[in-house]
Image 1 (tube, rainbow, N blue to C red):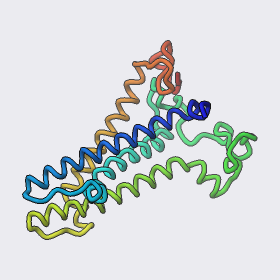
Image 2 (cartoon, rainbow, N blue to C red):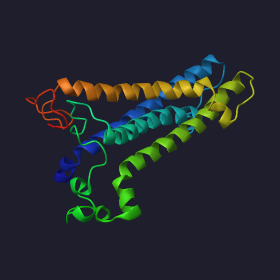
Image 3 (tube, helix red, strand yellow):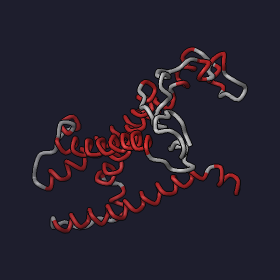
Length: 224
């Protein structure tokens, strides 16, 4: 058990932090929602009802979709684009999907390679692009969830103001939807750009996200 915890500590810690923060968001969101209910002259709701509400659903989904968009774009764009001096970039001159020899795929797969790495055709292509495909799918699903929950939450507010509810398609053209969406996208894209550029000149000793302390600022694709 001790060995398992040590060898999987990064995933376990982030998983635990995710659950802690999600629970914290639920408590804070419930309190904030009830404050708004009381201010509007309405009855507060229970924690259970809040957790199944469109308000909580859209708040969670809008953050998830922006995170998955960040990873999807980063995974795909770093196949073709490079940044001189950044450990987040491939080495200069290696743009593109690279050869089977470089990727240890197909005829160049080893005994330790995953089974599908040995395959060609559709299955081999799917495995070779599986990370980006799954991230893209998760982004699309969480974006769809956000839009559906957002429609319900938006209509709740409209009904309180004695306004007609809108359809899902209509909500996609509403400023509320794009304000929620774009404020998350811009923060994620800024964070990625900051990591790519700052890691050229700054170091974090022992981190694989940083170059070794003594590496040249121009060294590209080198991890600590």
